[in-house]
Amino acid sequence: MFVPSGEISWMRTHAALPVTDGIGANEYAVYFSSRDDSGRSQIGRLDLNLEGPARVTGIRSEPVVYLGPTGTFDDSGVTSSCLVNHGGKKYLYYSGWTLGVTVPFYFYIGLAVSEDGGTTFHKVSPAPVLGRSAADAYLTASPSVMVEGGVWRMWYVSCVGWTMEDGRPKHYYHVKYAESADGIR
Image (tube, helix red, strand yellow):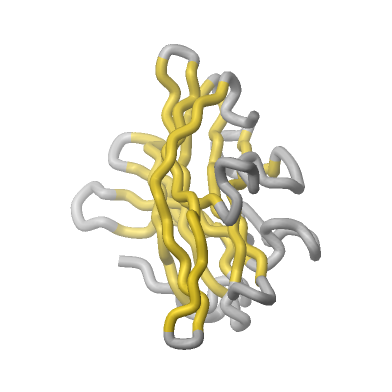
């Protein structure tokens, strides 16, 4: 089991939403979301060996997916969702968070890609890969992606509306489906 020690500023609490990737016999990279003192999440990586008793064999001191610049869809948090290995690259889909005024938050689907085996990732855009549209007017999040026959298939959460309950905004979700030829558009 892994629990952040609190010594690293971006990883004070939480090791949530783990996404695993096999990197060798009985060895896995685990991408997870951790929070800083302000509750903002970023995505980190630890390496885990499952031979014998499971043990952490390495942990990155810096996030692999950082907060976005001020004003972007992911300036208040990034949380891990899904990893796809395709064409020698690793596609790490995530939910990017920003704070709201009339509702507490907004989030949309982002993508960071690694071309070095998962050591570093770069965001494909400062904008979400799946944001607001006529089909998803409020928010999108939590994608699960797979590639079948050259078609990128995504299942994701879509907010279908907010209501006021007990004086507080409450959101409602549906699970939706989308297809792509490249996993980006």
